[in-house]
Image 1 (cartoon, rainbow, N blue to C red):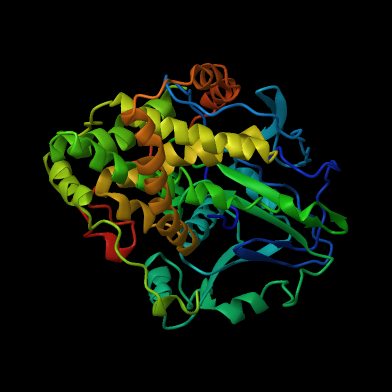
Image 2 (cartoon, helix red, strand yellow):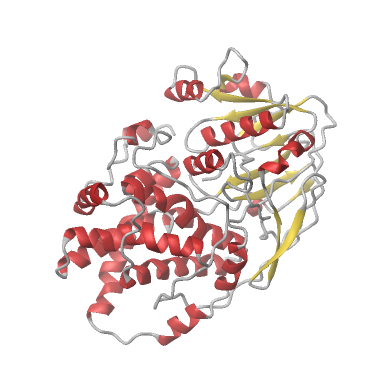
Length: 477
């Protein structure tokens, strides 16, 4: 889900995970190359004035699940400090580990011209899931800052994306829309096996689908501090290199795990379990999908490419559970969060804790762990499934996320059905260590810190949302 930097007015937290040879980095470069966009400078002595930091949205982890992950030994978490001559940084402590944050907000927009000093054009290459949000957020933020920096989108002429970019306000007439290579040639990018050594390269990656990034930005236009959280990674700053693993630390596990694949597998297998045990289909849907996307998510959030057309991705909302879901959503009163089923909560939170433990064992910082295992799920993704079902959530994401979800949902379905639920059916003794480990897990204290940084608005996803992929606007009810 990574993309170019977003200047959505949000609370920001610096990535605390780095190589063991962490250094204090002082940014200075001719050009900053983004994962999605490239900056064009007017001077070879351009100084990059800021490092956009990793954002933290927080909440309290208030669910008392009877299941939890076992705490094992883990590698030392190291912190990477950073310097910014434009934005104010501050230190937070998550479960005993220091990390650094930069708080976002619309009140910081006047600083953008200084942060992008000497930059004349920002090229956003591609559209997809993140492109529309990044391009529009940058454009709108710079306009409010009264900056003359041009945000230009580079796309294939004649493509559907080209037409969508026009509809979003970009045009070749005013120099904000052009062909991919035309846009790249106007930026300081050299094509090769690696970036030029005189170019700073960082990635800033919003923790949510592009639709969430844009939606929260728009919702928060009148509210300071609204936006979505992001992580950032530094690949190179002139001749100062950081371990390549720091380059946004692409986390494939969360896409395949609790964010998309696992939650799809969870609700499918729980729906079968409940109906096989005599529960009505309507009630089974409410105690699975509605329970997770409504009460559980709300509680967690507020209280604690080429070749693809030959292999099209099939629809994933055609099984019985999603047909029942259409009926349930059609009859659902406005604002109803559904029931709170303890068994569903236990399964969902247990898998969430399992993912937390995997990332912790790999040495990731708590800001990354919480972002990838909790916040993005309950604050960015689940609201889309609550609105219109699983396809509405998964298929509004990137191609990578869509493929990962389709690969892993059946695996989680299988392991829960064939292994986890069997122990329940057999009446196996409860492992009390799992419960005590869950209750004493340091992630809860870290979540309490994150709760203080929660955004000022919740994302609103109406069933008839007009900001989603066109082919999904009629999906579900």
